Length: 166
Image (cartoon, rainbow, N blue to C red; front, side, top):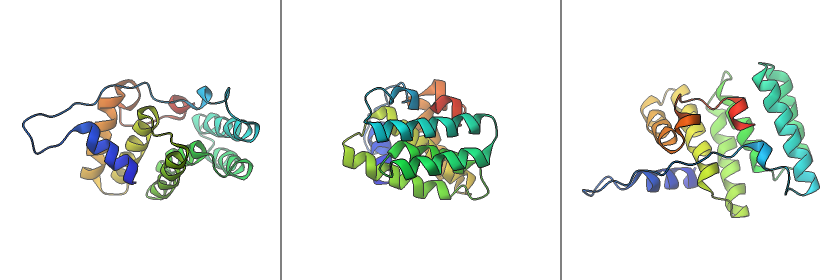
């Protein structure tokens, strides 16, 4: 949570001064971009994440969940599997569970040194959606607004669809 909140706060600027920095827009990361340079285990895990996202897009939640779980079996250090699971959990009965997966994703990204705004926009948006769906509406709305400002074409509607992450 620390990275997402720190980056979100930093990108939005400091509220105390007369100037407010507006976030630059970014092209959010897509899972399909990550295959080429990935080592074999990560590539296999990413393919399973992609299959899970395809199942999610078809509203097949149980198949999606099984593909995500298998992706973690193949490569437990794949932060993008945790990102996809977090996105998936928002649509479930306990959207607050997404926060645990986001925290794990952030930790792995930090360890890899991959703190790109292209990934962080998803962390901010998913966290906002999870908070909002969990009853913390004001907190969630603020983060969703930040994600929408950073990537209006993806986060402008406050939702990250499976196809937008694929």
